[in-house]
Length: 391
Image 1: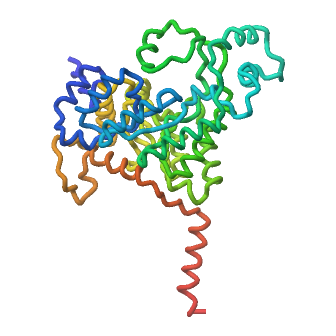
Image 2: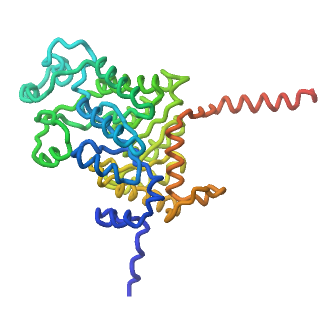
Image 3: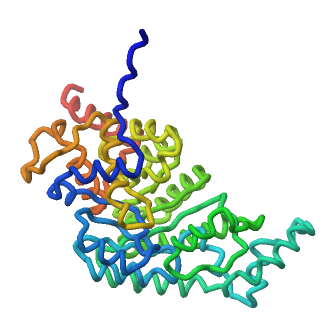
């Protein structure tokens, strides 16, 4: 007879199972869980405000465009002990922002989507003419940064987010929706027609770097989106470190719903001590590769998130990823909370470990890695000093 299959060590991703698993967790444990990236203001605000009042976990609520910055601020003001507000402009909206003086709406978008060289194809000209009426009037980047500065300054604990780069997002033939976005996107799922246009990476970078410069200036941590642009993200982090040599390591950067390869993450983490990664069931669990990424990440640089638009699912989805991380790392998961942590870190459970990671992320002020040559030169100097009297 064949041997019965061994039960999987990984938690079920069925939504009912996720909720059932969460229901058995004491509130005293959940109060130490942080969903480091979610979009609760994408859903009905009345429901969101009500659920936030009762939830046990803390959340980092992301803004993505001009119309939802105020909603994130309202949620944070209503529940300051549970909501870390995050203000920023998502790369999917970067084409709405003008980095050069605007002469006309058509000229702005034509520069992005129909550059003069090489001459555009006839089908792209036709697609542009169809798309243009759906596009909003562009907003100057300076105005965007001024608004962002005001929002971040109003909340001393606020982060920059969600910001980033995305090579594959295509512009839809539809007008930008007003909040709540999630319901409208669900209704349009499978029916929304996409144009052939993506947002030029060079334009996205200008918008992103202006936001990152502000984050450095205000010493605010960052939630960073990156899709199909591993090299561009790596080069961006290198460039920001070179641009802000004394200030860059004062902030932390979370590569959210991280889709990097193991090699890509290891290369970044070795060069940038302020880089963290967070994973979500909603995005990362689509591929088994996320478990390899968990295994490759050092224990103190990993965070968990839901990346969900409905606050009712924030806790179960975050808890599911926490249990997945625990299963990969071999960490126990707390079934009660002791305010006194074990002296031996090896005895810590997943909740305590991830909470300590979040505290490290929040604090910033990371120490630079010593360069190999610097370490070698220091060792030589110490040896020479020790042997000085023997010459």
